[in-house]
Image 1 (spheres, rainbow, N blue to C red):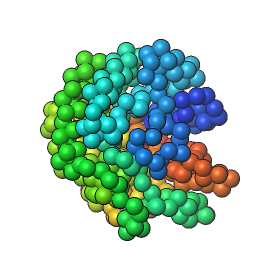
Image 2: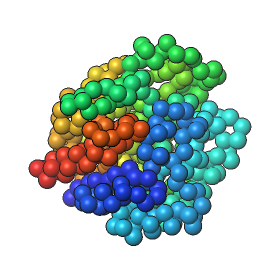
Image 3: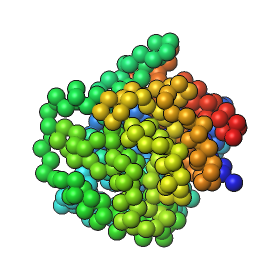
Length: 327
């Protein structure tokens, strides 16, 4: 029977967001980057602040557990950079560091490591003050506006990225298997290629099929971001059922628009039947972590962390739990 783990991205240090999570009944935490400040920056400077050292990681996991929060997923601890994605000198050292991280993660009992293959740019937005209902604020992406900006001098093709991903997975999947850890690859956001001259490859369901074929192991899986699959213009419940047990992590959000122009919307008023999406996850007996992702900024919040302020996530957790109870 499916037992979806409603999870919140929380800072890797105690603050009021830890207490608010427990007060709303959340029992699972994803120790996360600085809750959105680095969201629009480059892949090389984004750090998820999860320690690589085993003892530091253990203390972090125990700190969450001591307040009643289990950690079912962590990031790559800064071990994957463009050095690895672009196949540059030094990637073998990075991959070795990632493998060591996988061993530590398995040893402390965390089942999932999420990562991305976005080169140079992380998740990109062209606006972060789009008014929604009641003057709440959201983010948007407009490809035509973005493309007016400077191009990036990257000497790599999409096939180069595929070759480098195959090289990476060939070396890390056996380590993940031995450690009892599952890998969850996040889609490119926006799901377009190229962006500012930079190739991107995780932009469609067909791309994910290819990823899973590279290493047909249960340890090689995906992070199913609902908003990205909406932007890909897919039948999202059908995609959930298609990828089935290779989904190891899920992000619950919605967007309105298409890959070249979209706005992130309130979970309860977007174009997607979110109850049907959760029903599909129930159908495949998904029992992994699922977090509400990229919420609007509400009255009284600073919008310093677009998509990651707390009031919208409180609303999203309540909405998720209500939908799950209705199922």
